[in-house]
Length: 308
Ligand code: DON
Image (cartoon, rainbow, N blue to C red; front, side):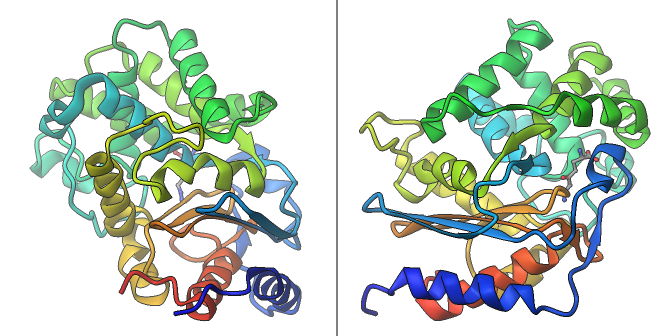
């Protein structure tokens, strides 16, 4: 397929999203997210050659929420490598992002690093030899390095509202602690988790952060962020597990590795071609951006970027 003409494709998608009748429902279970305007839509595409294409609210900052699980996983793999897979599985869960049901039968080992339970174990790993405040700082340094943007920060209001209301996450951490799969104090792993979810980025910053995953693990500076094999595996996990119980539907409709967050952001990777971020705060029933998913479906169709 010839190189797609991205500027008109992206502009048309942003225009179409303005007229979309079903915009989904903004997450209200975290007070800090409930006030976001559902009319927002942004898209940013950064290509392998380094060009960036944006449309809509691509420069507006939003809470990346569970998209942060990709960056936290990358750090944890850097710390303990494949030993991580003794504590977290790599199978789709087929359950909601915050589900606890599989944990009892599976002895405190979460199905994958992208459901909440798995991400909390990843946080526990990232606390090795670091206090929570240092671990948060390390993750923030990492995403700033990936995006080449020192302005990326944490929305403290979202972090604290989540800490006040995240009772299910508290339950998950304690449940896994009972099985010996959380090694630090559960509240420390949770503090890191709530803060990483509250990282705020724009679509442009998020697409820039994802470049290593389209480029076989390489930062644009030429430095290796992860090996090509590890980039391939992170992409595989995003494809299989990045949208919880809608991961199959996302693969069916879009055919790209992707990771969503309840803030309405999605990072999608077209390996060798592009790193893509979309944002629209209205969610579908599985907690994934309604318009973000639709926009990615149209982008994948019009560019021919689906990996299938
Ligand atoms: O754990 C939570 O409730 C959120 N802070 C993160 C969840 C999330 O983004 C799930 N994504 N769709």
